[in-house]
Image (cartoon, rainbow, N blue to C red; front, side, top):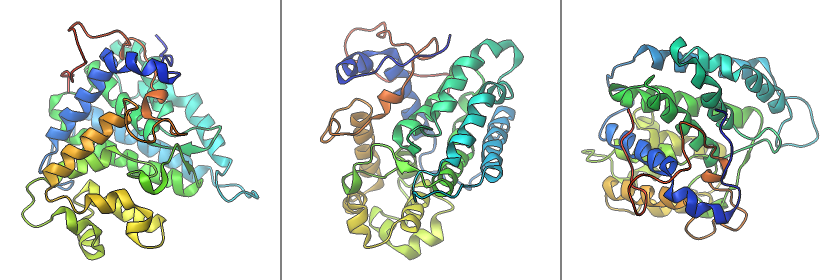
Length: 318
């Protein structure tokens, strides 16, 4: 079954928040959040064959960037070569997914491939944002649902696969000068990402030395970014933006005053739930939240969960 978009307008959001898809998606995010708590990117963890195949898939996407250089054009932003790169993915996505899933699950490839294609940005607008990031998380969640990824893959999903995905997305953003999709400017957490701040803050919970106030210290970031996803995000922001940090990343600057990483993590989860349920200030003012990028099919159902009342995060195979 090829997924289709069922969240097309604000009035569809109530259905989304009551859906099994919302419960499954948030359950997946929160399960991984607990799985990486207090762990460094450089720690030892199991790397299964499906994880290695996913990294190989992302390496292919990376190689295609090298093979598709930017074109000369009058506009500084939104290089049209991205459309050529995306056309390659659009054509090859099902084949790429088929290299990850076993043959007896081949019927799931078309549905899973849709989430992969949604995860790299919009080829018409040449932009990228948190909705595309959510599509990649949904792609990984689908692989858990069909049993390709398992419980003991949790750390590798975040540290090996999602971290490699971030590297490829940052390369896309820099190479093709992609616009932020639905950015809230200084009032948003980040122009492009959200999940690495959640999982990255979980990594830092109960750290003996690093406190939230330290992530605005350039020396601390440079010395520790290879261990912590949150600090890697801060490093990328400082490389891409100029001027005082408090001005170009005001939301993050405010977060640096929070007393503990546990409180940072809890606050970011609340923010993300608002992001994926279109609550909160500014969501209707030109901002396209993640659910509008969401497609539903057999693996992500728009039906309400069996239980009555608001959706609760549920356990996935991961």
